[in-house]
Image (cartoon, rainbow, N blue to C red; front, side, top):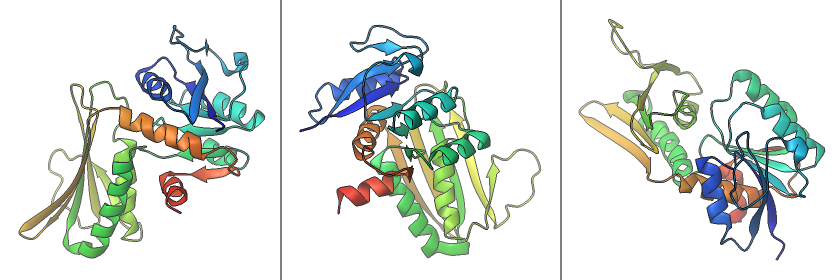
Length: 255
């Protein structure tokens, strides 16, 4: 069996460590090296820049940050590698850059690599289609106190899934404060909670007359995201340039 050769970007961080730990027992994939601004001994070569990488690889798993995005995309393009973008907090300019590079690079990008969250995404869209305008939709996301962006990329992904059921006619309202008046029907409320070591919790509430339907997901460990990233990394090699997400991976696995 040919093993998928992976470069881990952000190799010395917590998520990089989770990926490396899982790959240690994976017969189908291996980490050939890492890239990290703050290198340390982790059992594989670690470089501060992609320009220093010597190893041959098939794909990059990026668990770093949006900083230096162009360097990673340019390396993937120059070496014909797929790249799994597992970070969040991308700006509109970053998103445009990613879209441009997808013309020449196979890019796997999703706001959340958890299988459960991607199932939740389908469930909330189906619920919105059935419940319609008779139910108000509010989304609450909870994360650890070190998370820098709000709302989470996953919360926005869930909001987008709900909004698709309404032809994207809803507007997003980030929290409420003061005398804001009665809630408008075209709102989707999105609320961010930050505290402690919460890995990630997402709740989509459909509030109707005399009843509430809630769909929730709770990640108890960051390893679930590392598992998803490795599955994506195995999926990408030999794929044509373009944008891929979890539904593409699941369709192929279940074909």
